[in-house]
Image (cartoon, rainbow, N blue to C red; front, side, top):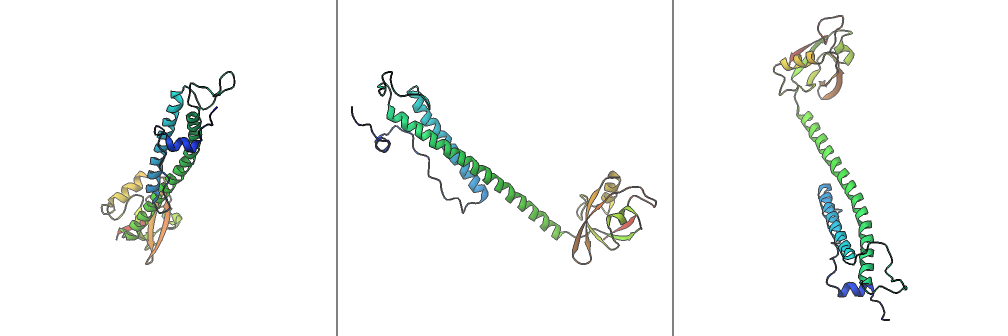
Length: 220
């Protein structure tokens, strides 16, 4: 019986075997999005290579398991045993690589989401930093909803719910928000003093005094 061909010898000589997947590149300098896109392409390449190796097994009508010996315990002469063993080994290795890639993709997508969230928060913070007040609190009645919310006289209003300097319609939009949100909390942002921004929650509701807020607001 002739000596079997080693895997390295077989791979160096065979031309009809699937090509190896590309070697992973260094992703340390990639942005999260670039890394995610690269890993997705790598995943697709691994999936393609696994299918190609599985086709080799199918051509011999064998799977990942099962004996390659005949009934007398000798290597079967009707199949290429070396090729089958190479294919099985390759599939196992590639599937392990695939599991690793999927974990890397999961982390990369998490990083993409994190970066996008941070960018949105930064943009929101920048937009808020550039905002100008559109109204000022002239008076606040004791024990009123505005008083309970912590609103103070001379507070300059930057945001009142979704109302700001661009869409307040000379305070008409603010009045509508108040009426539409009776007994519902409204998030507001005020400028207190020169540059102190304060987040408050104001709930318009009936109380012992006039109106739903208990404060007098003027255009700024």
